[in-house]
Image: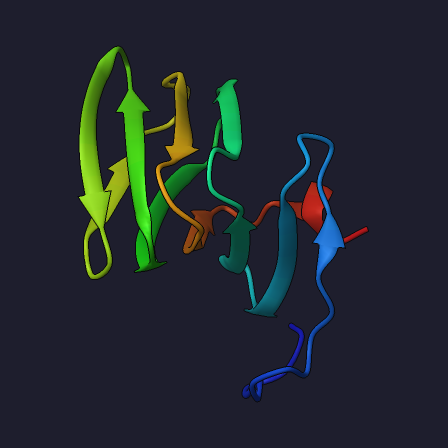
Length: 109
C-alpha cells in the first residue's frame, strides 16, 4: 500500500516507452495510474490479464477494445476485460486515470 492520500503534484511523471507519461497515484492490491498524452499520442494495442477501468479526466480519445472503437471525452469511462486487445489515440491532449485489478506490479518499479 502506498498510502491513503495523494495530493496534486506529489507524484512524479515517468516517460513510457510509447512517448507518453505515467504516474502511479495511491494503490493497494488495485492500482490507480494516471497517463498523460499529447495530441496524437498513441497507447499501442496490447493486452494484459488485469481488468482495467479507465476514466477520461481530460481530453478526447479514440478508444478501441476488441476491435470496436468509440470516441470518448472528458467525463467518459471504459472497462477493458481481462486479455482483450485494446489501445487509445489522443485526439487532443488529455489524461486517463486507470485502475487495474489485480495490481499492475510492473508499474511499481
